[in-house]
Length: 499
Image (cartoon, rainbow, N blue to C red; front, top):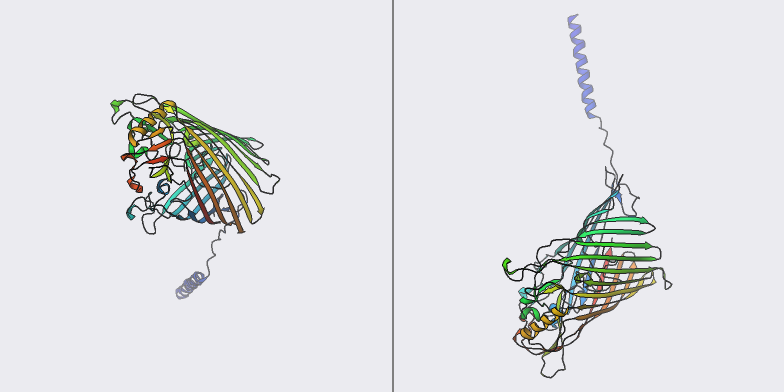
């Protein structure tokens, strides 16, 4: 009996062992795969991030530029370009990739959105002096295979608030491109590369919104704040009429905007308050300083759509006035001082020169800040000839005026440091007109040719002369230069693929 019991137990253990081994050989049920699902809540191109209720969209473009007649990528013809000698480029090239990431999540407070726009750029360099080691004045491309990384936008939006870096609410929706054109059209602000801010937008319905913002002015919205008492010949001959004497930033720019955006088009009014906080009259604290002074700017913009000339045609217009906030007119991509050279018919003169300098305010030792006033307009018209062809025309015009005290000091310095003789006036006007043609052979692929003409209407009448007129960096000798209006023409050729 004992023997039978042992045999039965041994058989059972063996069967269990065999069954376990066979079970181990059976296939294990695979975990369900989470496929990427289309998110239709926010338009085409969004997908749910697997395992979340957040939608994401990737986009961007790849662009190749060739720009004729300048050392920059469709910028102003100053600096080395303005020298118009053997140091100037006949053309400049650029390759750029833009990559955007857009995420959105529906919550009980509304949509939470994050957005980032990263830009990778290589721009052809230009000699800034007589030595090839001076390749590329910015130094950003000074290595083989190098280039430049930019962050144009990086912001969070939640419950009407925007935190981070994006375009200014002062700007018109088209920035400074009412119908294409160069980066340096005056006549309004331009923060196309973004500016740090905190903003709140209230939606009143029917396409009517109101927005207020605190905006960091340090990088993009401070024009020169010149201490005219420390002017130098080297600065004066390039349009820099004094030492830039900003102190630390004490207050953000205060921005307000009201917009009506409906089927017929858009109207926007915006205003800005801008604190000018200078450093010191001299090199140390004991020299004293001027009191802070607030400048301001106002701008109106209008876009008219669905006009009778054709489907998709549009007219964009804007006008701006500034008092102590010049960069809301001569915007962030516009040079803040420049000298352009040209020919002359004046007997005894070597060449001609046109100077201009832009400032929010000026002062001398012991005085307060005197504001600089400007106004400007710009606009453009775009016509679609067919689904594959469009063309545009655009223009801009701006004026800058110094106060009487600032103008008198600048003129005294011009006579003393760079030998100016004649009728002195540092004010100037600047105008740009241009046109372009865009061919879109297939969706999201465009080829553009854009041509513009710029005229600097400077108000000096006479000559500059003496040792102070030499500019070694662009090979200009000390000589007699006629004060004369200057012109510049450049052209952009671009291929761009959006994705």
